[in-house]
Length: 312
Image (cartoon, rainbow, N blue to C red):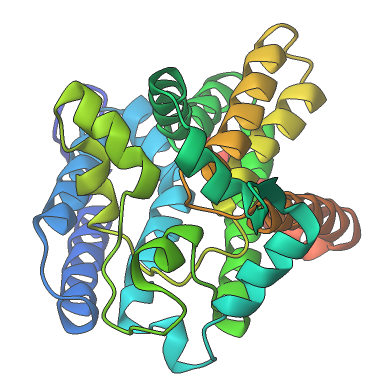
């Protein structure tokens, strides 16, 4: 049996039941692991709307389910804090940053984060806030462009994005690390209950009299996940696939955003230069590893062929 829910959106009863059961399972797992949040209902609402609206939107949301799975995994990390599995690195990373990238300020060696905290200006407060707002919209917007123009490249980009994140998560659990702002506000002692902090991005909120970044960082999954900086990884993946797909002048925009996010991560005290370099390395390893897997694994290639057929 099938149902024509809207024009051009005929869906079998089996698929409807599958979507409903998966949604219920997601809500139950979320409640048990991280507690109920209205965000979960919003996610289900968006998925239902796109899945049942039309054939095109159904293929779109099925394609983007790769990102949905990533978001769910990221959210569930709250249930398994990395500081419970490994010691948090605070002073060691801070001192290494000073040893390699330290800046002499009136006779004292300080980190680049501390330098910009002292010498920041309003123009950079605003500019870095704008760059930092790009770290999710730009990759998702780029993914949407690829979905409508180059489906196979969309799959490659999406799966590379998820793979880079998984590599980053492995490091988070093997090397928990405090961000620069942690030492600025809490010193060198480990405080398990430390909440997320907007750090230098609070100046952006203050200038426009809003709570944009405050609301974002209030929902963070883990304070002690500064190394590597996945904020620095995401735009680099976009640059790689932008160049690979010969997008011309658009790549200048992507490169500018990438460099801007790297600088912003340090300027706002959310990451050390070392974190940014680790994020760049993670992206490079993820891209190379995905290329190797696709080239060597016929199973993966076959799975990609089937998935591409579903969203065509």
